[in-house]
Image (tube, rainbow, N blue to C red):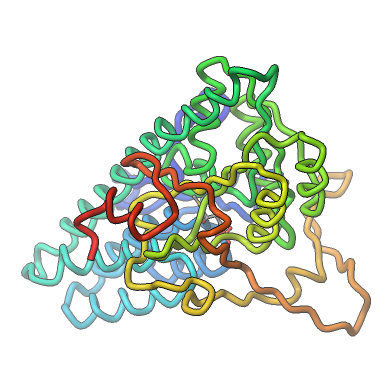
Length: 362
Ligand SMILES: CSC[C@@H](O)[C@@H](O)C(=O)COP(=O)(O)O
């Protein structure tokens, strides 16, 4: 996608700068567009943990390049196993991270050590190309939902939660891909952007992305969605996901479950967009089995923003001395999900639906 007319992906390599890796520092958006240069696997792990890079597909892609950076120093089998294990621990909920690392391991394990660095860069690049094309196809398969909603409305109101746009993937995004395609096709799409406390990925990142692409949108407090649905102001919900189980349960940013409950109560279609790398067929019951990341309580008690004179500052908004809990994801049971939008088409959020689209998945 483009920023001020210049096409970008969310991660890229600079061969002319020692094959170092570039990402946007997402903790600085929307205030400044800082590009980070990563040359060591430790920097990659830190960028994932601190959420300088985030979004399920993107952390997988960046971790893949992290393997390549690590192997430049030591391409032994022992180091390969170690770095795959270490990067896999950086964030627990998004399965894309482990999917990408398993793919790297499978591609590299049986190669002679001397061939591994070039093969690692090539495999990481293939993961990126795969993700960009997969997300483009998710857009194509989600577009008809917006097209049909547009037939009897002056404006189609889509509500989304967190950021499942192009900066959460390598390109296009998952939940936002159909929205970009609808907007580009001239459809009158408008997006309700949940602010997404505590880290504000909606207000900071989704709103920034949509604004750069010229897509009409309005930021709302997380608690406003149910009210808007009761008053007929939401035509459909589209969210991304960090892991979908074989039953069709959906892990996504904390607060997604409450949106699904409100959508169910109001008869609003609730769609989930995902690439194949987000499917975890080894898990059945998502509520019981998906590990939910617990992050620092300071993300709840504090807020970061830009002051009038341009400084980025973090201030405490909570009462002094109170404890804060910060589960970063929740699981929406399949019964609340209208359907899944994948790169292979749409399906029911169920084992039968997923197996029909992905017969090769174990
Ligand atoms: C295409 S991204 C899908 C999900 O990763 C996204 O909705 C989300 O929950 C991101 O969480 P984050 O904690 O910001 O990495």
